[in-house]
Image (cartoon, rainbow, N blue to C red; front, side, top):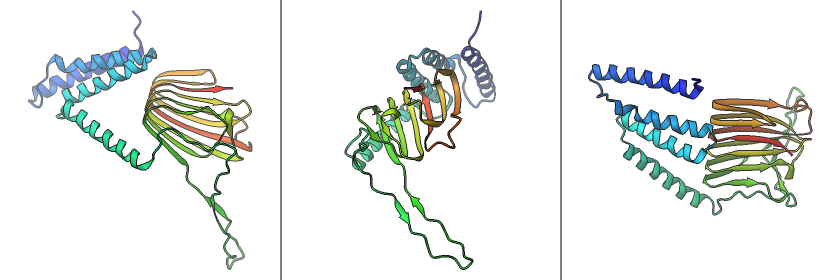
Length: 261
């Protein structure tokens, strides 16, 4: 009978932890019994569900399996860990309420002029006849959401350097509706659980790097799936293009899709 990579990996991991448990029990460090292997069963079914795109149920099982593993194999109790995570979530929520009145993403439309970046004036020439060049300073827009979706697919909007973080939810970005300035624009997206969909116009040159711990990466029809996947792609004319976008994506659980429109 053919076994998937996930099945082989988990059988090997279970055997290794069984040996570790027996060794620690023999040394009197830990009381080992077969019940301590139960979290691995939950994690196995969670990963199989995630492989079949059952992300919500699979993600929930993966979370519970992780909590049971910590409870069974470490001195930390699952109840204490849940309380600790819940307290952090509440504090982060309060911080977000103070920091911003809005949770949804808010990007200025293309018709609204954006404030110019701070420009440093060129200083007087140095004694050696050399001059320091002027330069601009700016920081990327930061968009954060613990639970919810972040969509940039509506009206025409202005693309600027962005740093997007989401805990649980979906991210959709339609670059065909964006007003893209000359030069390189950098978009960084990271998240815990959810899908990330990016729509790219054919004429736009991009540089793309994505890493997913559990899930699939599909870029222009080239799909890779499984555990700990990393994909990079750069269009041939990227360095010479007047308008170019660099996309950096990291996702814990979910799918990343990049599609031409």
